[in-house]
Image (cartoon, rainbow, N blue to C red; front, side, top):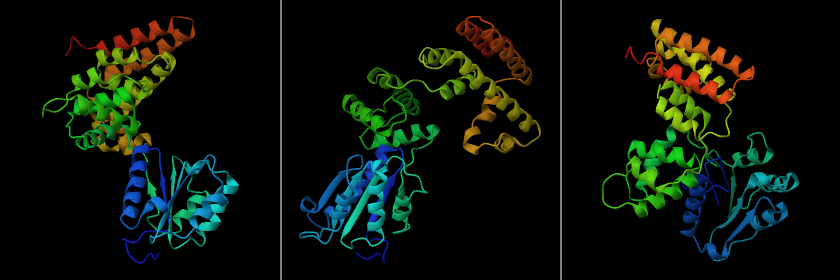
Length: 327
């Protein structure tokens, strides 16, 4: 099996990343491509990296195909291979069979491991990155996934689905299948329909709460707060205080005429602060300074024995309600 054209299969591939749906799609496409070349019923082997032995995998790779120009050896959970078994594959990849495609699937496999390097060495396109999208990109991806099930989701519906289900793309896709079966008519699926059909299976992430805080959306904050039993008020007020400092920075950069300089000033990636400019406009400079001072007092009250939940609740309400009369 030569590799002189872009359309020629490489002797090995590694689908690696935490996006299980993407990994599954990579393996499915590879199997479909091989099915067109020959009968894979007699020419494929599958192994589980958690229990498989490297010698067995290498042996399957060196087996000649039957009534087909190529065979497939698929190893799921390749990151769970024992070191000695992974070394067997490294040795195999030094001189791979020209009639076998070795497909490795792994949730995580460090780039500095010998197995990763061995696969990467067989070709520039041998490693397929299956990293999950950033959390703020998920609703857009969910809307794209929905079209594959014959439905259209509004932006609010997609955001609600991510909020309820979490960031696992396999779980999101399963819920989209259920929504598609229940949805009637050709109208887009709205947020209310999603919330009526989908049960919450994920706990609210603290950064979702701090985003609602920066939006100055008290009803949303209170709603999320009731679903965050695993996060302490100490953690939340610390995160909110950090967000306040970031918004003070965003206001400062805006006054200097450099609103795009927030990321550099905070030494974070641009995507981390893409909403900070809009969020900063929800508060006056005086309100942010007062919120910062009040957060210090609230933290001291928590540490002195006051009811931490009550202290945080009062600080949150006072901070987000402050200035309502002015608006």
